[in-house]
Image 1 (cartoon, helix red, strand yellow):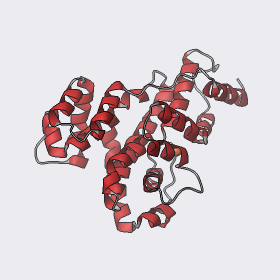
Image 2 (cartoon, helix red, strand yellow):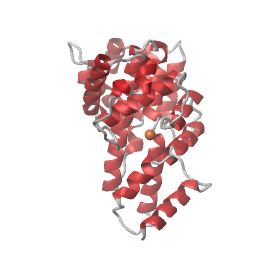
Image 3 (cartoon, helix red, strand yellow):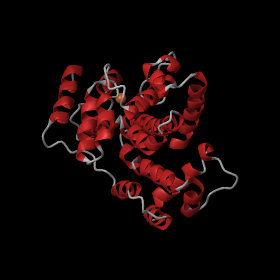
Image 4 (cartoon, helix red, strand yellow):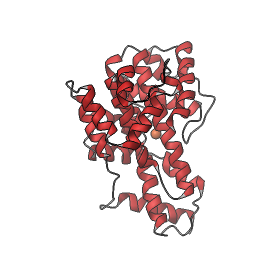
Length: 281
Ligand SMILES: [Fe+2]
C-alpha cells in the first residue's frame, strides 16, 4: 500500500465517530478519587493497591528503586506508604496502573509503546521534581499527572494502528517508521490526547497541558504547562521517548527562565531522568 494511502487510512480511522478510545483503568479511577480526598487513610490506599497483585508488585519495585533509595528494602505496600507517604505512593500506583495500556502483541508497535511509556514515566517524575524545585510545591501532584498524560494522544494513535494492523487492514506487518514518526509527532497527538482526557473526565488543567505542550505561543503564566514543557524538553535532550536532541540547552529555554531554574538544578534534573528510565520497567 502506498504511504500516503496508508496515512489516509489511519487518519480516517482516528476521525471515525465510533472510534474506540482506551478506558481509564478502574483502579486508577479509585486512586484519583483517593488522592483528591484529604480524608484517605493508609489502610484505604493499601487495600486498593494490594487488591491488584500486579499493581502491588510494581509499586514495591518502584519504591525500592534508586530514586527512592532507603536504608532498608521495602517489602510491603504498607511500609512503602509509611516511608514515602500516602500521596507519593498513590501517584506511583496511578502511574503503574497505566502500564497495561502500553502493551501490544505487534513487535514493532510494542517497541514504540515501550518508548512512550518510558517518556510518560520520566516526564511525570521530572515534572513533579520541577514543581518541588521552582516554588510550586502545591502543584507537585498535578505536575506528576499532567506529565504522565501529556503525550497520551500518541498512545491513542498507536492503539488505532495496532487495531488496524491486527485486522490486516494495513497491508503489511511492518509499517514504514518515517510514517509512524510523522503521525505520532504531528499535532494530531495533542488533539487526540485532549479528546481522551476530556472523555476520562480528568481535570481541565491536564487537558490543557496535553493540548498546548508544543504550541509555539502558549500561556507562560500557566505554571503546570510551563513545567511539563520543560520536562518534555529534558526528556528529548536525553533521548527518552520518540524524539532525541542532545543539543537542547535547557537553561536557555523560555520555560527554564520563567521558572527561574539555572544550570545546576537542571543538571540535577538530568541525573534524575537517567534513573527514571531504569525505574519505568
Ligand atoms: Fe508531545
